[in-house]
Amino acid sequence: MKRPTTRGGLSSPPGRTIQRLRMLLPALLLAALTGCATAKVPQFDAFANAGTAYTQAVTGLITEVGDSAINANSVKLIGDQRLLTPDPLPIPSIRQQDQEMRDYLAQLNRLQAQTTLLGNYFQALADLATSSAPQSFATEVTNVANTLGGVTQEVRGTAIAKQAQIANVAGSVGGLIVKGVQGRELQKELEARKDTISQVLQLQQAMLQTLGRQAQANAQFTNALDYDQKVIVPLTTGQVTPQTQQAWMAERLALLSQPVLVDQVNTAAKAALSLQQAWNKLLTNDLSLADIQAITSELAPVLTSLDALKQPPAGGNPQ
Image (cartoon, rainbow, N blue to C red; front, side, top):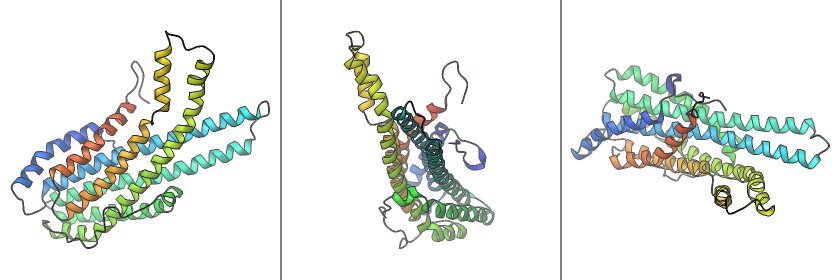
């Protein structure tokens, strides 16, 4: 899958997002301790940066899920060919599976586009909250929100979304009263979009849970071939010796353990729920330092892991 970009077409390093958020946390804490009566810069900037951390993690994980699906299908093709040898695998069967993979990746690309737009919306909202010319930023927020709404409709039509169990876990925000907000344009935007953004996050949470199950199935299928070759064959052919048994045991443990990708996607699904709850609190001017820290703490290991995947091997070139 193509690697996603963030707002403006430039990829922001995950580490930089976390650093920016840490710089904002003292201001958010000060606002909380002084009983600030209005939702000013700290809350909206902190929320936007937490949202950016979330969207960067999710777009990266979606790419990894797509890669794992292709790898699992490749293992299936290899197994199918071995069963038919010496006859070749029928070309129509290969092409059908290729098309199924293309369709699946297209669905993931739609979800990535929605996720990136969600991050863009959070940042545009923060810009609106801090702007001295709110009317110009209000237009930008509206444009991003409208595009997000259109892409979300496309996402809801995907097979992945139809498999997802979408529940209103965080509760409806329709009855929430937006309060403590400076600026008529910001107040108007929050009132207009409070339920829509909550529903997008609910959809993302449900789809991430589905992707976690799919990544689990893909990993089990892919690992089955590795397990036979790296665990069963050495054990049953006398290749496990006192000199090699520690390496064999480590290989067996790794192949039997839950894949890291599955844990990461499940973590992102939990973060989507946390972001829903933080959105509700942002609307009512109740967002706290602890709420932001909970989200970023959940996502920090995922972002670090994804950032490591982008680094070239020693002596190598970037992908």
